[in-house]
Length: 211
Image (cartoon, rainbow, N blue to C red):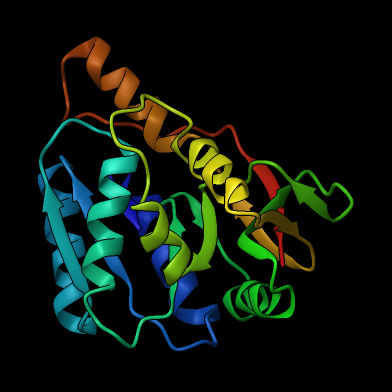
């Protein structure tokens, strides 16, 4: 989970994952230039619940930060799947087992992700990095996400997945709520104001479906 400030959203995302995930998992926080309160809170969560926290102080780049967290998780040979989630989502029952089940049912699927706005289930050329699940082997074969992009690292990743002859699927059946762009808008606001400690939330949201 990528975290940059926005503590109330990160806590909500974390506790929803803890409560609703029925598949064996370990959470890794990748903290990027968060304010002191956020850093202390997620560090406390990590200690109390035996999680991983990585503090990365480079300029915000989602592809690079995602690679840091996923490669840390993949140091364990027992980890078979990579899960990338933003800190402004709220998952529902059986979200992860449903997505992993989709990967295993459809062997041609390389990445599975939430579908937006209740559209009919179908395969898309690009899926959302806000909540994305893939096989470890796919991530390692591609060398992870492309770093240095200002946006669209998830789309670029999916383009390369398709070049392997695999599909990028949007599945239906499990509810997930996405507040939408909380971190990116906070980063843009902080850059404009040159104040990286006063990141504020955004009430603009949207509902997406996963499964």
